[in-house]
Image (cartoon, rainbow over all chains, first blue to last red; front, side, top):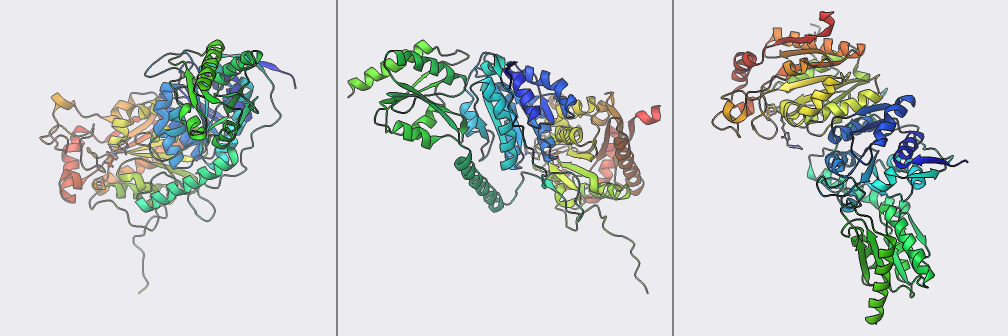
Length: 358
Length: 250
Ligand SMILES: Cc1ncc(C[n+]2csc(CCOP(=O)(O)OP(=O)(O)O)c2C)c(N)n1
Ligand code: SF4
């Protein structure tokens, strides 16, 4: 297949349409504006629904309605807008509705900056909304991967009746890269027997709700979610490792930061320092087992987490590594992007420190 | 002597008891909607949206498909359903805290866009479910648990007339304010629902029926007194009647 040059946001939108998404609802916010802009013409062309909502709150609730009606539906936003969607995401979890949410993260807190950030990691992986509950969170590091993951996102959402977030940063949205459209298209399930499409022949009605007034039945529901999450953890955890076997040091990073970390690793390799890159593709569920096994290798002296925040995935890395090896952090935040040279400096520093400590 | 059925539960309702208080109009309004759905043969294609408020469990009572929406967001949820499944008959059922307060943006914009679903708006001048707090529709002087000496204009402003306000928007095809406090009004109300649903099927814009409704429990009145207060005080500030009808204007 021939490669085509695509801007990240537009590739994500096109990939969603190819994955069978037939409803898009969104509200403008930089750096994801090309998604609603692209959808405004592409969605009607594909026979789907496009509405520019009055707010992110309305947009996520439109998604809730379309998903309840059995249609593949999505919304996109960036950090401040995602905060507004959290109530709706919690309702999607509680009503077990499949939907895809793209967060093209920017630096916060507050209005922050329109420059890229990764500071919504904990929000996405720990606290997508009020109440117990998770969404699957996919973190692409290139435009190719972002496009590929859109079909996966819709398939996972339908398979597990859950919201799925594609967690990227402004760089993914704004960059242009050559990509290849894979043959694999999304496979919407032939039937969603739970959807509100009108009563069935026997007069059976469909009800979509997250209300379970009796606390014992609500607890039973939350426990059933927990069981679903165990299945997701077992079957859907994904990661990439580059040069991790026999590495002196592991660098853990997600999204575009992982690409920057890889440049640092290449620099270090020339000096004879073997730095492996561990990149989770699913940041929820997190590939704890894989990272733990890699960190347990005798060659590995330390694990460095690199992020565009104050150290959020750091908690997951610590959970994976525990005290098997020392865990360090390097990050830039508030819209600043780490540089390969600084990451390499930090690795040298850490190796010296580990050596000194014996 | 052969038995003659003079009254039966509508097939549009499930055979269950509701949780509504004695003298509450929610149940009567449910029944009217259900009857219209049956009479118009829409039950198999209808999707209702229940609000956060006393009617949250409407899906347990109606014999059609239902989606429960977050507080105030029913117009957005209805938009998502109707835009993707225009063949369905979609109605959002919302209270006055739900629609006129927390969901004010959603109803204004759904109306502005002329969303082709129907809104059933229950104005009982109070927050019922949470125990009688002031609503945007609470009348001046009316006592509530958060306006214990009566709503004052200086502190809270004047109550909002939603049907009139939304009727200023071009997306509104039909808006009428009705009540079910007596039989003539109840019959008018049923006609209004029928008209709204039939205009929805023609797809000419948003359709809206506001019900003045009772909350004897939180008004601190008997059911009879509540019905009287609705007709005397509420209907004076919120005049009954058609506010917008693009069909009649043609
Ligand atoms: C986001 C959110 N805020 C507040 C509440 C609490 N709450 C539940 S019902 C309700 C008021 C409902 O009043 P109204 O819409 O007038 O309906 P009624 O109960 O009178 O029929 C409120 C504030 C909630 N469930 N969700
Ligand atoms: S509290 Fe008021 S609105 Fe709610 S059921 Fe009772 S009377 Fe009806």
